[in-house]
Image (tube, rainbow, N blue to C red):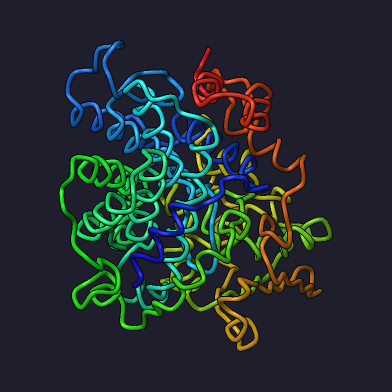
Length: 465
């Protein structure tokens, strides 16, 4: 049965994944960067504090850390806050086959559970923590593929929120060392918690940023209830009224049979640009063209991406040409085009600065940016559509000074087949940690040497000095 297959995997999962350190460092950077740079952060943190009530006594059992301040919260509240922060810049890692962001909910849940268990007097080995993270990635991505991400989106669900709930439950369950019955009950409870709608697109709402945090919190809650021997629903995924039946018109439960054959961490890409992943291949292609083009001479730009990306970043084109906030910029192909042609890149510093997240005024009203956005059209073509979702490619055509240049990218930078360089990774981490009080070199060193360290060392390195 589907649930038993997932439970068996969680009980035997190996956390020794070669790519795990890079994803841990990426998660800490985007979470801390979200705390420092995202406009939604003050409201989200205040909201979490109101939910949490009085701060737990520093000596209390089962507390976890709010990054990077070091403030102590309950594990569920810390998972909510840190998971939301990790997605607040939409800069967290992305698994293309399932179309979800696994790290934000999974690592938030695993870290909160690890700190909570340590507060209970249980020694938390880095091996157990890493195994929890690996299990969470495998489960979230497997469930995401099995539910059929396109069909899931068509019903209006946000896959990171819904499938991330199962990944968070797996991560927290492994960290808490639940047995088979405990894991079954945790997944059964999580099946009644999986939620998250795409309606945030209507106004760029902060629901999207909350979704991974809410999923992480649900993972903590489901495993806590299961540890208390609360009985969860049987077959929460493949049952007659389970997740697949209720959330998709085209599920493929057979995907779960292959969970033990995959390393979902290695399959997951890391973002070089803080915007919708559908735009990344187009930005890569534009970076090839930009050095040879005078932005002031651009007459037309045509962007071709998968049709799903057109819906998110190119429709309606009139509003996409007039972003009026950070989220609007992240989901605007015209803005990404204008920024890349003007700056030569859309990396962390360039994008965050242009979108008004680094203290400078936003640039979306700049006449030059507006003119480039007005010159941009967004569509798809049969070749790109045919290769999707195996490839998230793009083609761009820029006409400037009467000359037309074209470039394509079959896979975005940061994908396993096109990994970010060490310099690109360092640049991303440095930009995100700027002003946070966290030393980037120290954090990177602790992450790389985690097998010889402790989870407490990891948290200390991610806490502002």
